[in-house]
Image (tube, rainbow, N blue to C red; front, side, top):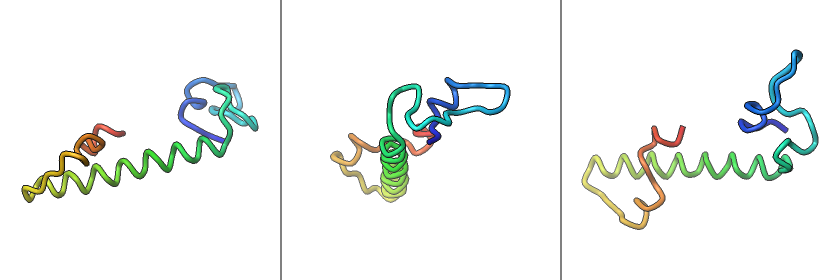
Length: 73
């Protein structure tokens, strides 16, 4: 398992990041993967919402979830 949180938490002379079955935070690799998918999905929704805004297409329901794509990095 490898996630950004463990990368910033666990640092050894040999490596950076979590090399355990369960991370320092206690989440499993499945949870880490699902969080990655969620972030990727939100980045996609934000990208397309931003593209729509350029053409005057605004959806308030989407806008409550979608911010500027650059703010999700």
